Image (tube, rainbow, N blue to C red):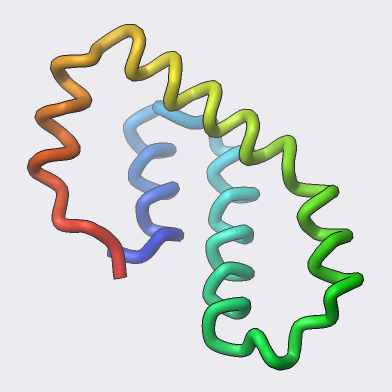
Length: 86
């Protein structure tokens, strides 16, 4: 499962909405670019993207915290059974 796939699963399970899922999937693609092509990244462009997209990360964190607060036992079970990401 890729990072992008994980956001799709969260959307399908109605944990995050479609708009947030799409924005996070784009961020996952950018993350892959950074990891594999970091020598080609312009610092100015990176700072611009981070400033623009930080709200998406904050929104995702709010969803995760709300999910943990509302169902802590279920979260532990789901995390211990996960296979991780590639």
